[in-house]
Image (cartoon, rainbow, N blue to C red; front, side, top):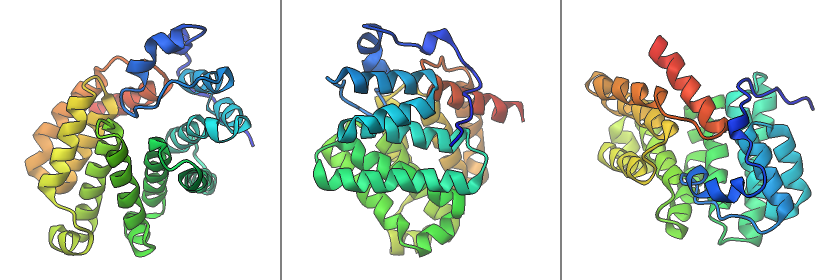
Length: 257
């Protein structure tokens, strides 16, 4: 398979040698991924942060279960931002979900086996339409995995974002009443989760983007002003790696519209 090239290459995203561990806390504030002992897994993460997503997937998978998180995050970010072929995108996301399920069985304490499962299924759901995904029972799987991730690591900012976005997406598609009764989602709960994510990871562009989108989905015009402010703040964030750069560029494009 041919992987599309990351469009914003920057030497600043290359964390050679000790630089990876020195910057790890900031790079992984969102997902609470522990620093890996295996130098080969470290290299997979280096490729991921630099935007060489294809190499990160291959290097991560070559390390077995220890490299799954690097491979799965790289594949999910690549599918979300760079893959333009819908079938290919969905195929990549479902591969990630399947690997995460294998991981959940073999290493149930690995928090990102749960978070990345939900993240991949969430992006897959958006790709096929959230209404279809709910009909297929994916909503329950996403909610279960995110809840498990937060039980294992309450400071997992990205899981807070994803669960807040889940509340918003369901309310947007089926309404607050049906959403509350059938899926247990609430506007206040969604907002509280996104607020918590912003406190846990204050420098994050994606937290602001997802929060902005959720406000509009849950509160309509009443959420627009805050959403515009959040997008503006996201566009001004300083990216530390390829994923954050993609988030910032997305925010800039939204502000320009």
